[in-house]
View 1 (tube, rainbow, N blue to C red):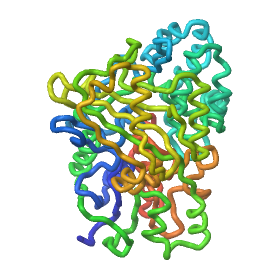
View 2: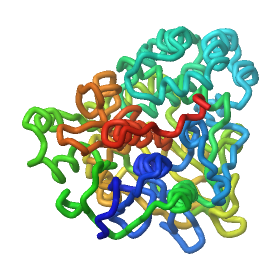
View 3: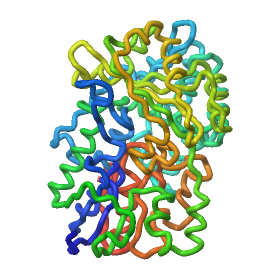
View 4: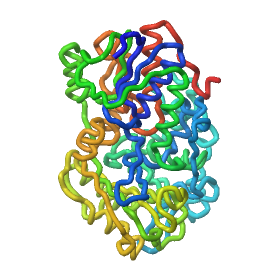
Length: 483
């Protein structure tokens, strides 16, 4: 490797790419290293089932990519990135054949919730009015807020457990809709601050929708890489870094890894107290994922589901909450909560003409070795009778296989660590800056840092911003709301 780099970034997930771009924008010479032959981390697309059927390997739907204050500053459309936004962000079917649906219109969403319409609007309307400023506060490390009044209003509801926040509603539809959103937290819905996950996802649905990348999630990574190269950045793939000794000299090294990999890479060079803190880092539940090649669209009973990019399968709040609680205790519920995406409904490039794809996962105990294919398909069949008859092929990812694909998914944890209140702002450890390690010039820029998982690149941006200030006395390019 060349030794003339100012900074080296290891890992090309959305955070690693964001960090590399931020450093390169500041005029540095930056090297981006990726262990796999393909760039993107969780942003990859491949023919997993049958020829011509393109499946998103990890991340599939991207509300935070569009909302990201950093990605919004980048000219990604110039590199072929096009987002498709379904009419319905997410649908939530019930056993009686009806469904709740999160539409772009908050008023229309509320109207379909019947007696809970007024309560839904009362909760979300004030937050939606300030969402452009709120998103920059929410997707940031612990800091003194620039918009304290708006953030305080959000926090009064966001810090509640989802099960408590749901008490503002009386009917199953509104409660179930909130529960499905909050279950993206991958933890018991009785945990403090799970309400935040539900609110953020509802607000993104009502502000810019839940888009998917045309051609596959790989298109996001491809655009980010193309922009990095256009700025003068250097990329090397097929270079799996197992030790810091492999890296060329640089004033700053940023690692898009979680604490488990950080200890392997640099444990002997980190302080004893920092190593001790990293070993106490907690990973959350894993996921079991299934991709299908389908002869026809999924035959949903509820019409709203056919119009949705994402469908939450779990029934009532009580059922979802009980299932997530059991999974957190190491059990496997008979009816797991399932998150399903049907990209080919809106993007014909995902499958041969007349055919379709579907993508789904459920939560499982971390490192689980159980095959949940039958349970997931039973949940789909529950709300779409005849689904199994349309399956042409399937591909599964167990937690171990997901971790093999991306080492950051320890035990199948796609969030890079448990995102509960104890680790929301103190990930990976409690420090003045969560991005600095105890080794001078070494930084962490992954989903194991604030603001956590999701395709938004903000962990990488904030880490690079910290490194620029510490090591080069430079400022990062301003975020969208700062322009």
